[in-house]
Length: 280
Image (cartoon, rainbow, N blue to C red; front, side):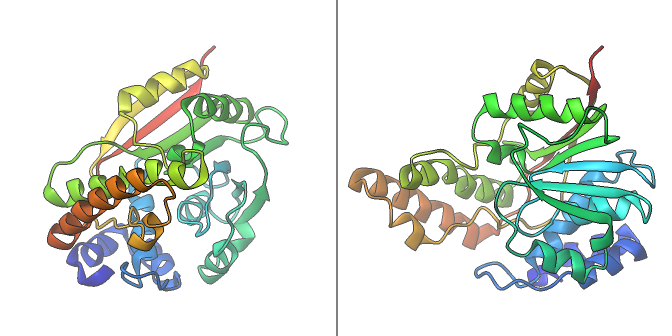
């Protein structure tokens, strides 16, 4: 179980034997203070998020923001079946991607592609579905979000978007948000550009999809009862901030967020899920 959390085991059983088999093949990842099976828990969350969404066997899916661990790519590849395909787009972070997709036995359904999602090398409507799951916050600005959504709607008539929301219903979710809300400032202070933007409200995300030319078919909130410690950044990382005043402020806030995490743990906040089609 994920760090000894009983919720992981019970939800894995509820997900069914097929999903459980895939999750059980995911390699352990050593990344303290996360438990070694954190990746399994995160992937189970993605299975939960996309479960109510209609994805037929044989579907061709474009995934934007595949990330270093294929966390959403694997659930999508599972859902499209042996005759389906997932083209997984990422700009640069492929660290453990191939290791994970081969370990779970789904590599033959997945094509990784390094490119900018604002300029996809595909003709219009070559896919049935475009998906971006927990990757929206990495697009660095709302303007880029609109550009990416527009491009997704160009190559697929229907898109699926999912992202955590700035909501906390219990202390463990508040602990996650306290740590996560430091990331944008930390990255900007270190690198000069924002990254891991603050979570947007569901209404705001809907508005951006509509600006991109999408017509929203579904917009709902999914409650995820699982641990979520991926907001964590080591204190030593914050200590690299060059501006002394900014560094002192961020370290003070980091200490407060870490105290909450140690006391309550960290849980997934609610997730906003949007399905949209091209507005005619």
